[in-house]
Length: 345
Ligand code: CUA
Image (cartoon, rainbow, N blue to C red):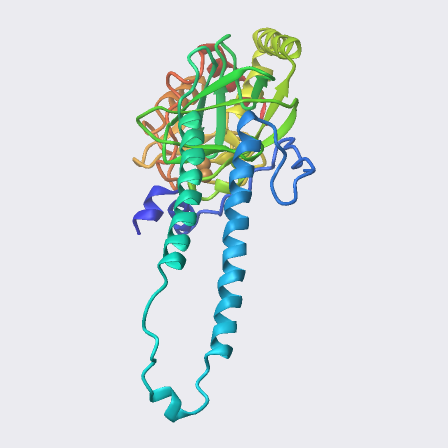
């Protein structure tokens, strides 16, 4: 049962709780058509060389499989004993062939050494990020990705310039996640309590999907976002525009943006139906029964406390499942959330 306690699944299996609704995918990109037979597009410097190595391994395996199977069938027929008596007679020729044995040892030896050298070099490349890379922080959280840019911008999408080394520092605030960008052939776990990293050098502008590739609970498959690869000038303009847009937003709008970016919708509905947490529709001013048996009228201070210290006053009938947002949301964003919740009549 330990898996249940690690996920929110256990929470809604309790009697009286409604199952969480799937999160609507927010403008997710369609997987772009790929000219490759069964691989996604090649959009980073890693993609092509990995595919070549994969194809070489695949074809060697396939040709060996067919060759061995055909030879086996041929020998079965050719050396089939003509009768039971013939089968019980000892074989007169019991010698071996040095030439044959050396050949079938040496040729594969050179093939696997070659594969090892190429594969090891690629592995070392993949794991040693260049010092001068553009650095973005990624945070995994049930069930959304968040990215923080060196310019001071937080955003739910990954935007990067084309033709530059980009390093992603990955962390998780709850359970294991895994940042996966198939078009770049990169994937790295997000581990609570430590940083992991991946890097890439995008070669094609465009929009590609980003997945979570580590089962992390009920809405694991909704933990999606996108990576947008811009030209250098477009990228700079995008960062400036996003910063300007967020700074100048009125509070309730900033709250709505934060509500969507911070993953609040995973647990709090806006239509009055309970999910993992209470619905926020008409929450402001409502009198809530608490688990402790007392009751409280929802005001600005209760909302703020519940964002910063969610376990302090839990509404009766709901699990203590919410993570704290202390240190993750700016004061202005928390005020924005409070103002936004007030508008949810
Ligand atoms: Cu996060 Cu799966």
